[in-house]
Image 1 (cartoon, one colour):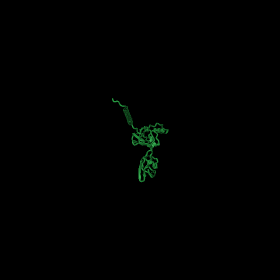
Image 2 (cartoon, rainbow, N blue to C red; image 1 turned 90 degrees about the vertical axis):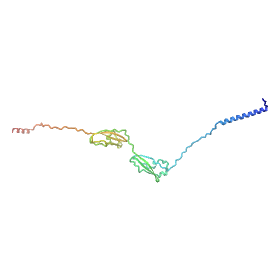
Image 3 (cartoon, rainbow, N blue to C red; image 1 turned 90 degrees about the horizontal axis):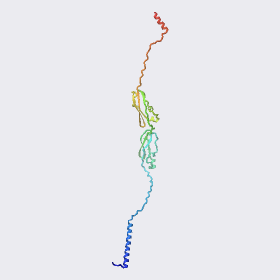
Image 4 (cartoon, rainbow, N blue to C red; image 1 turned 180 degrees about the vertical axis):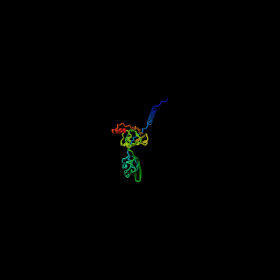
Amino acid sequence: MKNFTNKQTKIISAALATWGIILIGSGTTMTLMEKPIEKPKVKLKVVQKRVAKTKSNEIKLKDMELEINKPLSVDVKDYLENVDDIEEKIIKSLKLDTSMVNVNEAGSYTYTITYKKKKFNGTFIIKEKPLPEVASMTLKTLNLEIASALSTDVQTYVVETLSDEVKANTKLNLANVNTAQSGNYQYTVTYNGKLYTGTIIIYQPKIINTPTPTTTPSTSPMLPEETDKNDTQEEK
């Protein structure tokens, strides 16, 4: 093997050292390139802001409801579904008409609101006053002589004592009862949608035969004058 001189040995050592440094640097660079790139974090802040409602000219009416015999409101705002969305100057120009609503009779009616030349129709329901609660009604079984008159007072047929309001709203039906003929008949009483059934018995009263009085011979004593007259007649 050929021996290198000191100069050659130094040159070769320097070259190897240089290549070693280059290789180590390349390895470090490759390691750094393999690391994932971190994304910057961004914080978002959501701010909610209330947007004021925009007033409009659209008119929406309510479906109104009221108990019978109660007064109607004359304030047009009470009839508007979207009163908060309508301009005040428009509300002041609206004309309310409830002349078709009869508060004295239950039913469905129409009311109108007029804006300029345009009419808007709404529904107004007048409902019956809620009736007093009655748990139950017990009907009587009545016995009446043939040709008897039937009472029209519903209390006559009900065991429980009824208030005047309940009596006024109770319907008595005696259509199936024939007082001219003996027999068992049904009658009905209706209150607040509930039907109750009772019985009326029409009967023929029994005729009691009384004995005819008999005439017995008189046994009363004769007066003295009558005795003298009889004796005189015998002597003759």
